[in-house]
Length: 482
Image (cartoon, rainbow, N blue to C red; front, side):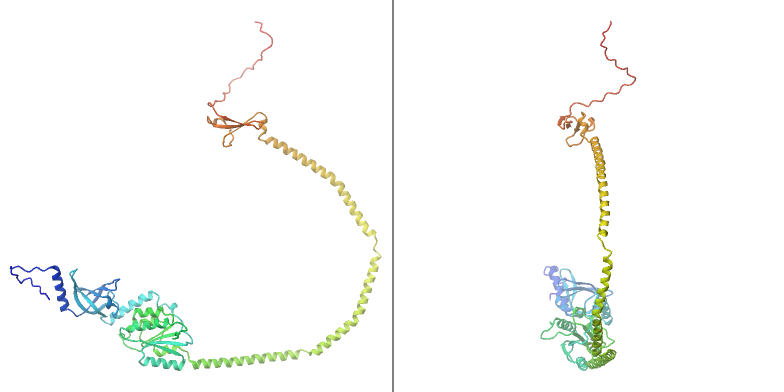
C-alpha cells in the first residue's frame, strides 16, 4: 500500500507530485483493504438490469446514498429479486470506480430487511402475475377422475411422502412416481420447477410413464421456510405445465404463490392425495349397486314383456280356427261364382239387345250433314273477307310509301337543292359557320358528291327595300312616237 502524505517534503523542499491514476488506485486499495467485508442496510432505488446480466442499483437512507452492483455470476444466487423501494440487507465489499471518481459496493448477497418487506414484494409480484392472467380460472385444468400414474414432487425423507403414499394405497392403488427435491432453502424453487418441467417433458408411452396428475407437497412452517414457493420462476413453470397440478404446501392457513397458479389447492398433503384419487371401495360398491339395479330392471322388463305376450296369446284364436273359417268362406264364394257370372252375362245381353234396336245409319249421317253445311257456309264467307283484308293492307302500304317520299332526305336534291357537309360529316346549316379554306363536300340530286374549298369573304344578304314598289312595266313592242 502506498501512503499519500503530501506534507512529507522532498529533498528540494517541495511536495512530491502524484499522477491521477496513482492517487485513484491508492484510494481504491485503501478502501478495499479496510472495507473488504461490509454488511449494509438500506432502501433500493434506481434499479437497472443490464443486458449483459449485471444489476446496477442504489442503496439509500434518509441522509446518504451509495451505488451498488451485482455481477452476473452473483445474480442467480440472490434470494430475492431487487426492486425499487424494497428495504434490504446486503453484504459485499467497498471499492471505487477510478474512471468516475466515485465509490460503490460490490454486492454478494441480498436479503429482505424484514418480513414486511418480503410480503410487500410478494404482493407486487402477485399483482403482476394476476395482470398477466396466470391466476385466471379459465386456464385451470380439471383433475382426472381415475388416474393411472401420479407424480409427487416433495422431499423423499419426511412424513409428507409417507402420508401421501399411505393415503393413495388405501383409496386407489396406482403407480406413484416420486421426484425428490429440496423443499426449503435457496435451491428449493429451482429444483421444484425443474421437476415440474421434467414430468411435463416425459413422452406418452415411454419407459417412464407420464403422470396423469402432479402433487407438489411440503409440510407446514414459517413464512421464511415456505418462501421458496413464492418464487416467480416456479410460478411460471406451474403455469406452463400441461399436466394438472395440485399444490399442497404447508397447512390450511399457509398461502404461497404456487397455490394461486396451480389447478387445485389442497389444505394438507393428505388432502391432496384424496383430491387426486377416488375411493376404490366406493367405486366397487357403486358398480355393484348399478349392476344389481340393472339386473332388477332387466328382470322387470322381461316379466313385463312376458305378460304382454301372454295377454296377446289369450286374445288371439288358434291358427287352425282362422284357416278353417277362411277356407269355409272361400268354398261358399267359389260355389256362387259360376251362377253369378251367368246372371251377369245375361243381364248385359238384354241391355245390348235393347240398345241395338235403337241404332241405325241415319243417327251417324245426320250430324255429318249438319257439320258439312256449316263448313260450306264458312268457306263461302272466307274468300271475300280475305280479299277485303288484302285491299285494306295495300291501301295502308301505299300511304306509308307516300309518307316515306315526304320525309326522304334525298328528295329535295331532285328539285335542285344540294347538301353541304364538312369533313367530319356534319351538315352545314349556315354559310357564316364556314371558315376560309375549309374543305366541304356538296352532294347533288344525281347522288354525285363534289368537294370545294371556301374562298372569299362572307357577303350579307341584300336588305329588303321599304316602301311601296311600282310594278315593272314590260317593254311594249310598239315603237316610241318621239
